[in-house]
Length: 168
Image (cartoon, rainbow, N blue to C red):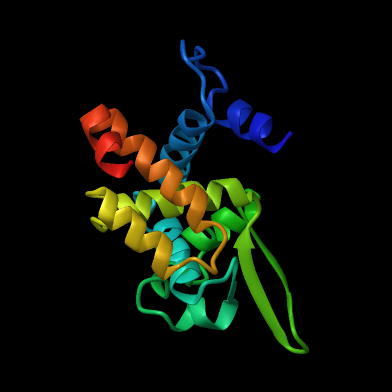
């Protein structure tokens, strides 16, 4: 149901693509959100980076306010990326312990997709060895597996079977 919701959001009023894949829907959803937040997806990428760095699906709201990469997007104005993503149901807030609040992606599969984008952007998916290193160094963080799968799929699409043969 969530994937259907995302599909309907991003293709509303547009013709459907000839080939429809989960990655294709997530790619378009990321672009859609980047337009909506007017930050080229920077906040989503930085939020996912924090998840990866901390090995957690949830990030303390206070950390988002303190971190240099996310601080500006947390500002109080109505159109701020953080507020828009909360309002549109991309991110959600939940209690964290006695006094804290955590923030997480509503759709875990979308978080995995964004993590995969990070691996590509940060050159952690340039080779089979790079992806193996990303898996090894983050193996306790379950979403890294699907993130690496996304990055691998993208690299194979770009470079062909040669990249896949190196991976095997």
